[in-house]
Amino acid sequence: MASVELRPGESQESLLKRFRKEITKSGILGAVRRKRWYISKSEVRRIQKKKAIRRARRREAKRGDRGSSR
Image 1: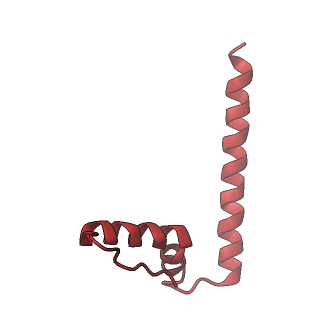
Image 2 (image 1 turned 60 degrees about the horizontal axis):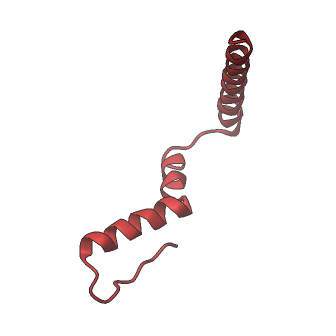
């Protein structure tokens, strides 16, 4: 659990900014968003496979761009 304490002389805005940074760093918000709806294991695998294919295509396209500049 992320927590921040008010430092002496610190404004509420900077406290909130530190809290948001801490939440982002810990990954709590991402986990909450992922668990908002139930997704079956097979659906998770399908999504991961789709993402992997997309990454591979991007990498291949990037490699192709490098070779054509010579």
